Image (cartoon, rainbow over all chains, first blue to last red; front, side):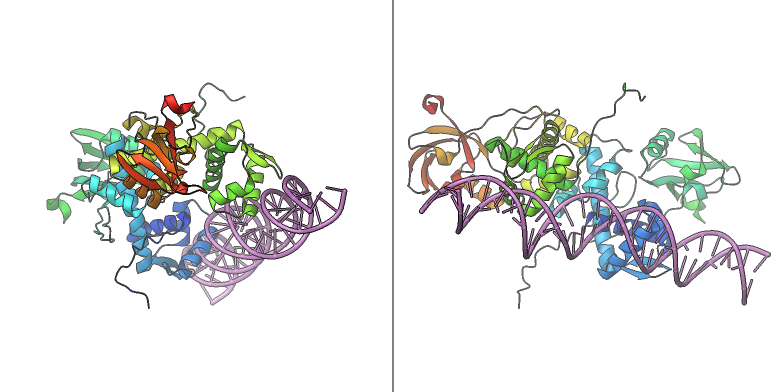
Length: 234
Length: 234
DNA sequence: GAGATTTTTTAGTCTTATCTAAAATCCATG
DNA sequence: CATGGATTTTAGATAAGACTAAAAAATCTC
C-alpha cells in the first residue's frame, strides 16, 4: 500500500485539444445546461463529426456525460479541469495587460496559447503578483485555484428595454476588432449605460454612454452584459 | 501580382516537435559541426528511428541538410528558426526569475513549454521589460530578434589543468538538482575559480571557489564553462 | 402521422509524431 | 579484405485529432 500522507499535486495535464473542448463546453453549458454538438463545433471551428469523435473520447475519460443525439455535459472531474483552464486564461490575460503592456483587445489570442503551457506553479505566482484578483479584464470572474466559481449571469445589453439603466459588467473577449470598437464606444466594465431606444427586428440600439448617445448593432450589444440598476431590475 | 510593400511579419510557426528538434540540432552542432542521429536521439529522449523520420521531414521542409548515415546540419532557414526558439527560451527564463520569483534551477522546465506558446510580440515585450538583455540566467548568450548570435565557447571546468584560474561564464541549464548543487558550491556565472588538482581517470576535481576548497565530480564539472584568466589562457 | 429537413453519428481517410523490429550501411580490426 | 559490431535507416504499427461523405436519428411541417 502506498502512503497517502504526501500526495503529490494532481497537475494532471490533458492535451491541448481536450482542454479546449472542456473550456468550450463549460462556457456553453452555463447558458443552456447541456451542449449540442453543433454549438460546440461552431465555437471551436471544428466539423460536427470531429466534435462527436472527441466527445466520445472525453466520455471514455470520464470528463463528460454524453447522451447521443441530445448533448453533452461536464462531469465533476470535467468541470474541475475546465475551471482550471479558465482560471489560467483569465489570470494570464490580466497579467499581460498589467505587466506587459498588452491592450484589451489583443490579450485573448495570446492567453489562448499560454493557458495550455503554463504550469500550476506559474499560474499561482501570477495570481500572487496580481494580488489574487477575482475579475479578469473583460469583467469575467476568475475561478479559484480549487475551482471555486461564482455563478452570475447578467442580461445582455441587447435584451434591455428602452429606459432601462445599468452598469456594464462583462464583455465577451474573443474578437479583437469588435473589442476595439466597443472600447471606442466606451462600453467596457463599470461603464454606466442607459438604453434610449431600440429599432425593431434586431435593429440597432440607441444607448446613452457617459453622456453621449451611441448606436449599437444588436449583435455587438449581445456581447455586452449589464447589471441593471436595482430600482429597475423588477 | 501581390504587392510586396507591406509584407506581414513572418511568424512562421513550426510544430512543437519541429522546434524542439531544431533547437537541439542547433545546440549540438555548435560543438561538433554536424549532428549524429544517436546524439540527437539521446538529447531529445527519442529512439533513433524516430529521429531519422523527423530529420527526413525537416530536410523536406528545407530546414536541415541530411547526409544519410553521416549526419544532419541546419540550413540558414533552420538556423534562423532554431535561434528564434532559443531566444524565446532564454528570455523567458530570465523573465521568470526576475519578475515571477522563480529560482535558478526551476526555470528550465517552465520555459521549455512556454517557448512554443509565446508569440513574437510577447517575446519582444519581455525583452523590452528586461532591458534587452544579452545573457540568460545560466550565462548563455541570447540571440537577437533577427538571429544575431555571438559564437563563443569556453572550455569546461572539467578540462582545466591544476593551477589554471578563470571565471565561470556559463552553466548547462537542464537539470534542476544538479543546478541546485552547483549553486550550493558557488559555481554560477561570474564566480572566479581556480583548479587546485584533479584525480586521474575522470576523478573529482579540487577547486578553489571564493576562498573555499570544493570537490567537484568530473561529470558536474563538465556542465560548467570557464573563461580562463588571460595570462594563463596560452 | 408521413415526408422533408436538420442534426448527429458512423465509417473511412489523412497527417504528425512516435514506437519496435528488421534490414542496410559504415567502420574497425584482425 | 572479410567480418563483427555499432549505427542508421526502412518498414510497419499505433495514437491523437482532424476531415469528408454517407447513414441514422430527431424534429419540423403540413
